[in-house]
Amino acid sequence: MRQNNRTIVLIGTTAASVYGFRSDFIKFLVSQDWQVYTLICEYSADELEKISALGAIAITYKMSRGGLNPLADMRSMFELRKKISEIQPDIVFSYFTKPVIYGTLAAKLAKVPKIIGMIEGLGTPFTILKNGQTAKIKLIQKAQVFLYRLAFPLLDKIIFLNPDDPVDLIHQHRIRHKPEAIEVLGAIGLNLQEYSYQAWDEKTSVSFIFIARLLAEKGIFEYVEAAKIVKEKYPKTIFTVIGGLDTENPNALKEYELAELISMDIIDYPGFVSDVAQRIKHSAVFVLPSYYREGVPRSTQEAMAVGRPVITTDVTGCRETVIDGINGFLVPKWNPEALADKMIYFIEHPELVNKMGQESHKIAVERFDSDKVNYRLVKLLELI
Image (cartoon, rainbow, N blue to C red; front, side, top):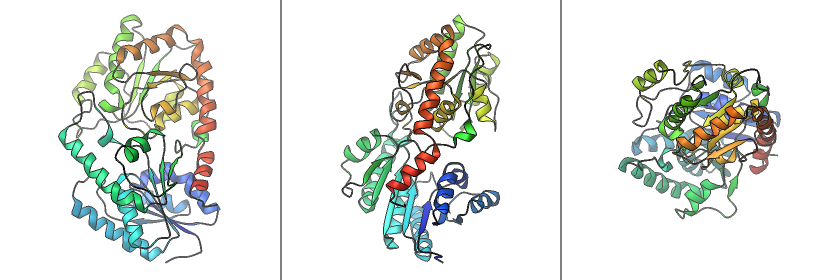
């Protein structure tokens, strides 16, 4: 099955995430004469065609991303081993929790010369909610740590997106790894041409936009409470919310709560949109009061590339996007009053929107340009 002397297998989850977040990386590898295979467990025929158009070979496998069945996961691992053995790659590069764990074990069994894993944030098992973690989440965290203990010693490189994650995962839990394996990449980046800079129209009123799943840990409830506080003083202020409801998540905003907020004119909720960049450009300030264990939030990167100041929380991942007082403000988590104060500050000092927005754009160009990020990544992976 192998076609040339340089072959890499990328193991991810959804075809949508491969195409949405790995396209530029795949195109770069192809330009450097790498044969690229992508292993995907959720897909549509149209998505697979898009990946093939990038120059990669898309191969499907079975895995439940959120499932907790160890036997099913072991079957996935052996399926991955079989497919990897047929390809005989030089490198296997996995990302997201389950692919890193089971893809790494599969690659080792397939005797792949070089195995890389990337952890894009620690996710729900390591997120501390305002009322603490449930017993189930604590158990999932312990299970993940156990599995990381199996996989991490086999990895030649373990790449993180922010400096806090290796401390909180590897060092705190004393997970063995190879010497010099740990690397911090920073954000995975984005195509800046798709999120081109546009100054905010200073003739319009200062408005705010939140883009994320409507979950407690993403800060939707703090955003709503801050909006209520601001509207007591500036009732015509627009607070846009873009993101989907998650009816299966007990920490999510409920459908009836969303309907009530819309009817009370607290938020503007356009529903599903495909023109995220334009929505950001029509708003003045981007707000993400998240306390989720982010890698580096993509929505914040998009807003910064467009040229918007950011108000976000002083927590892991989020703090990597804001230099406090330069391109926006960092506020404490779970504190809608502090968030509202910064929103009001922008309303009363609108001249800062474009000034700080320009600083956001500069940071995006320096840190989040996918061309620069992919070059750093291939250097870390020693692909060139």
